Amino acid sequence: MAASLTRTVGFHALHHLYRPDWSETRNREMFGPLASPHGHDYQCAVTVTGPLDETGMVVDLTLLDGLLNEEVVRPLSGKHLNRDVPAFAGGRPLPTCEALAAYLFARMASRLPRGVELERVRITEDATLYGDCTGLA
Image 1 (cartoon, rainbow, N blue to C red):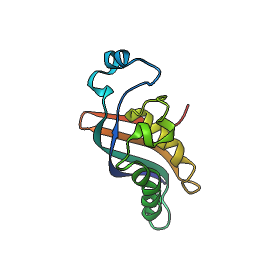
Image 2 (cartoon, one colour; image 1 turned 135 degrees about the horizontal axis):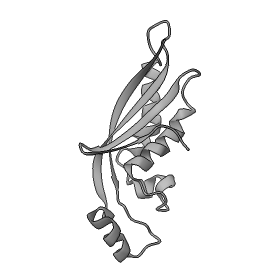
Image 3 (cartoon, rainbow, N blue to C red; image 1 turned 180 degrees about the vertical axis):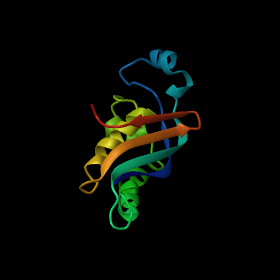
């Protein structure tokens, strides 16, 4: 029988919506106050699916927690995403919640045990905004 499990971790990070190949004026026109560095208390929710094992679990929580610590919390917590995460350093893509979800999906999907599939990575910026990645096209 297949089931799913979602684990959520939090981290605080800074970012800004700013393309270095655009002028300051164009960035301000496009992104308004979001063009300046600002922080979020992000939440990252990862959903995995697979068959229940003999313990009734889809995946060992210690393994999943370790993966979330290695791929999400340690590399992103306290960072300025535009400067400190090479994938976003050039301004393409911008470190939006949906781009973060896609970035993390790609990093985590291959690290799960055989038979466990990554269904979704959700990055929540605040109570009104989140981005999902359910696979890479």
